[in-house]
Length: 73
Image (cartoon, rainbow, N blue to C red):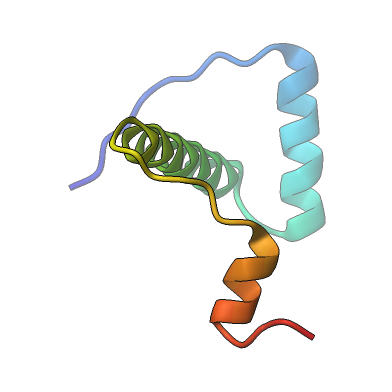
């Protein structure tokens, strides 16, 4: 199911979006959809990190993650 909405952007943001749409050959709607998806994923990641910290989880350095998955080089 699709949801349609009107979105009012400041002129300078609309112009930047139009430039990016021309540059990538993608419709503005597609770029906006991807931006919303990225924002929602980032918020979910932030909530997951906060929840882990509340339950005693500790951050893992990126170098350790790379070593654990065989990506260190």
